[in-house]
Length: 269
Image (tube, rainbow, N blue to C red; front, side):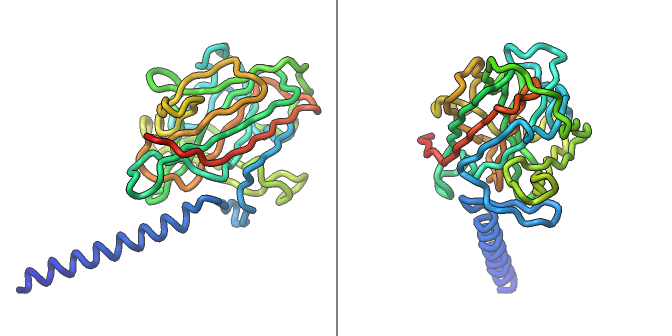
C-alpha cells in the first residue's frame, strides 16, 4: 500500500510540474512577443519594420555569432575576406515544426523591399529557446545549409561611424535595431543574448526557404529587390523569440531603406 501511495504521489507531482512548465511556456511564447534587455521593457515587436543605413550597428567583420564564429563568405557570390556590416531585427512571431498535437505547425513569412541597396545583402535567422535558454541558427555551409542574398546597384555610402565589430565569444549580447526611441540618438536600448554553449549544438535548427515544401531550407542568391521568404524550424524545442541578422557588404547611402513585413504562415508538414 505504501509503495502504491508513493507511485500516486510521484505521478501527481509530475503532472503538476508539467502543467506549470506548460503554462510558463505559453506565457513566454505568445504570438506577439516582447523582450527585456538591460532591464528596460521593450515595446512589442512590430509586424512592419523599416530600417535605414544607420541601423547597421555591427562590423565590419567577416563572421557571425556561433560557438565557433561562422564565416559570412560561404554563400555563392560572397568572396573570401569580404567584410560586412549587420543588424539584428526581432520578429513578431516564431516558427514551429515540432509535435502538431501541442501547437500548429507554422513558418514565419517575411516580405521585404529594398530601396537603393549598395552591394549585397544577406539574411540569416537566429532564435532562442527556454528551459534551458540557448540559441539556434541556420547551417552556414555543407549539407542542409540555407541563405538568402539580394544584390543592389546603388553607390556605397560613407563609412558607418556607429558600427563596431562584435567580440568573438560563444555568448554575445546584441542590440536590436527595430525598437526605437529607447536610448541616445534613437538607438534601441533593447538587447538579446545569443548563447551557443558548444560547437555543433544549435546549428541547423532554423532555415530560410522560398518554398514551404523545402522545410530544411535552400540557398537563394541574386534575389530581386522585393520578394518573400520563410523562416522554418526543425530544432524540436519551442522558440521564445526569433530574429533576423541582416548583413550588407558595404556602408549604405543615406537613401537606403529596407521594409520588412512579417506574419505567420501555416505549414502542412
